[in-house]
Length: 99
Image 1: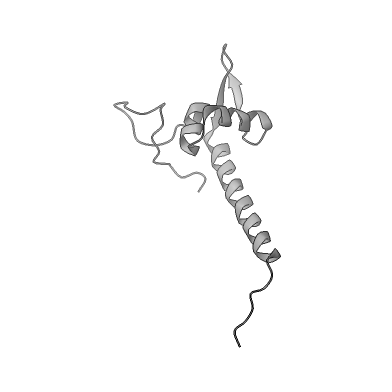
Image 2 (image 1 turned 180 degrees about the horizontal axis):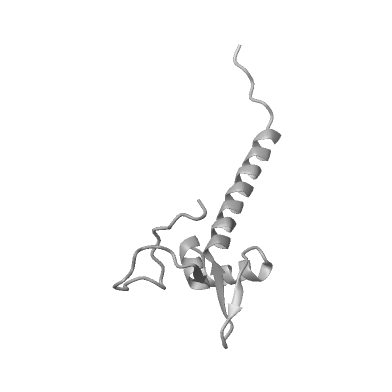
């Protein structure tokens, strides 16, 4: 749920002595790709298509994703998958009842 502290280890916080295991507020695209288990290029495409809200920061224009937006993105994807499955199930003909 939104607002709860996540127990995720990302490349940004892995191996740090003060690591609490919680997700930082802003994630790099590499962190997001790691969490979604997709390539960095696929993550970059999600940002550029507008599906995953992100912003650029710094002189080199590095991308960051807000944790809350990332969590909402995941929830939206779950909702879309549920809706797709429900519509597929509704479109299938009713199974024949045994006599």
